[in-house]
Image: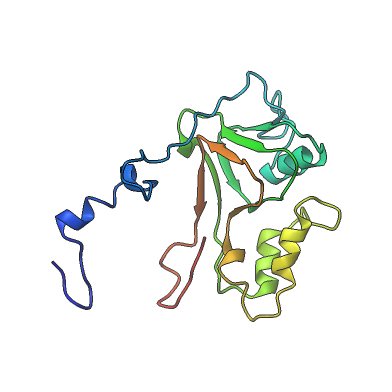
Amino acid sequence: PGSQARPVLSADEAKNFVPAHYFASMNPQDPPWTPANIATPAKADFVVGPAGTAGVTQTSIQAAVDAAIARHSERRLYIAVMPGNYQEAVYIPAAPGSLTLYGTGEKPLDVKISQAIDSEMDVNTWRHLVNPAGKYMPGKPAWYMFDSCQSKRAATVGVMCSAVFWSQNNGLQLQNLTIANNLGDSVDAGTHQAV
């Protein structure tokens, strides 16, 4: 079906492009990979939510990530995120221990981490969008990640720096939350990649 310029998969071809096959093994005899269940603790190490709410330790996800990384813990640390729309970029640097971030809402859409970041932004515009209050600064755990984007010599930040959520943490677990780049397709007819 379709045309040479705009091909469409046949039903037989399309049957391989379903969630059940996304993590299939190259060996047809092996079952597809499935992630292990994530067990969340009764009490998280850090809780993100509105200021003044009982139990909240940080009001931004990045602040909780920074606090967790600063502990230099070898064990897994847990960050509970209360329902809300967190308009921020989140950078999780490499660290000895692993992190689990999980939403405390009833469904993944109850906790949304989002921002509208465009790969075609100039560095100065990107810097002001991603770091308006100086959350990334020398001495903070994720500074090197932010600095790798802000020190680019190119006219635009590029695809990698358009990421709303960027992790270099081995063993990172995410559960019951949504991550979205809100740029959308309505900017103009140009190329606007957004990760």
